[in-house]
Length: 541
Image (cartoon, rainbow, N blue to C red):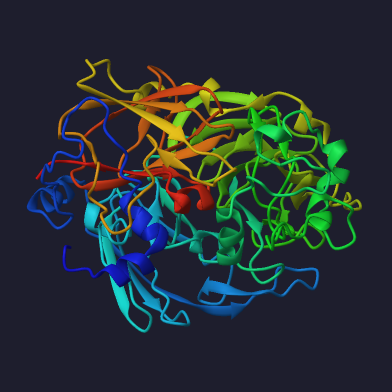
């Protein structure tokens, strides 16, 4: 692992961030002390993999990452990067205990490196897809084969872990079925949400380059500075509906340059009470459901009275979605792959990287499935059709969006997956720091150092019950994702691998250190993570 040269590390981008913004550990258990970290290829990693219950069956897939012109519907045909020429990529589905053998062929242009991270799967460390920590980034023109046992059922997805490639078209659902499934339903529908910029108004790399300039000192033309704190109190009405398009008299149009600084992509005034204030950084021209724009939606066709399982995945880069099906109640059964005590709700909030499974009994007619881009006055849209009738408008706002809205912190783990009570062996306080002014997102004030991925690890030891206290010192929410493990929110909350931490709030989670390796912990906002809000949660060698 130490033979990687600086150039390949820098190329690895978020993958390098893959190593994590190697956050400082707060109780002296090895932080920056030169403790040797376990190598992802260590025998302990292989030994843990051997203990996983395996069916002996293998599922083989080939995934070719390459440039593609894709059809998002409505005449929107952007050039992007995709797996096998389609976005989302083809669903991968297997049974618990099956071994996935996935060959990644990198056909990306301009010597671009890439990888695949299997989001939410507690797998062997050397297959986690995080350059330069768990593997060398896959070079253009070459291949890499991922092979691991998927021993936990659930709704997952996969995406690159290099730079801001997450915000291109390189993602697809990964469903691990449980042969002992106790849920009764007639059909299922995978609902994949995404915010889309690539090939329409610019590329994610251009978005990140603009954001990195920060907002401090940007001239809004009225003497004010649009720092995130300065935007408090602006509701959507003040911002002209946030349509920052060409002829809008919005801040982006009037302040297109400030000392040469562009404001083509930066979103101002996106406010959400559910998210505790500032809802997002980036303005997206489209919000997709299953790769379709709202004006030309994906349609699920079913029969009245049938019970359908929706597997909802937020693959977005910078957008939380409030999801509702007009005229229906949703019964939440799982989040991030793990069962919860069932809750009937009108709508649910899904942060980037989160997944929810819900059951719905279909009515008779044509119904809008709306994914409201939280705080951004835009939405993704799909249709459920069980009978005759005309389709509602893509801008429809079903009343359910303002009904009972469920967030993860209010759910309870199902009895069979709740952690047994145990003494906490180690507690790490992780301060989420930074802001829009300087775009200096970090953990414990230390952005990830690409050239030194093993600096300042958060040290844990096999067999420990670990507590992480996320303390959000920023004015923005952050969906914090832990690789290789699932944690429990509080003592009886849901089992998750990605959870929203609200601004100026603290969230405590617990997990068992049972999967040796070096594991990313990061904000799943693609741009916050790439800016440095990352940490390496590592076991000692």
